[in-house]
Length: 238
Image (tube, rainbow, N blue to C red):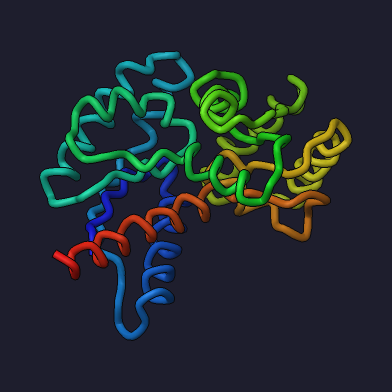
């Protein structure tokens, strides 16, 4: 079995979910007392968040790149960045290490194509919804048409993520507003909705949405389990 490197803490609320889902996935696949081999480095999000909002992405990437080096040194075979937004600096992180990165947008794009959908709505931080590092990857590498909410709705989503979900608060009024935004995207033609922030699944549940949800945290975790188990199978044949 390959060792999974988790670069987490952004926020730790969703990193807990990654750890649980990956271990549950390994247990379900292998049975018995099996659990995942994991190296976890959890950063202090208080230090990363201002760099995001000040546009100091290179500095944030340098911090995460150093963390990734420590994960690699501890024996990880591949890296999982436990956040959508910080894939903004995935290439910079990649330059610090020799192990591969399991990109969250690739895992999500593959899942959407398996469902045979081509138009999806995207919820996430303003960075994820507005910048090309995520939208562009889904569009250019996976051939998807990605719709984003209008500007006022993007502001609501961003605020709820940082002011509520990242500190563990789940507000029913916020859930209703997210559902309204989802319904608007479906009205524009979205066949599915990407929960493109690893905390949004804390708030929006499958029963809340008129369209199929693509929970990036769960999708990313499942793909990490696949990579880890594939490594175990390859090792058996060597």
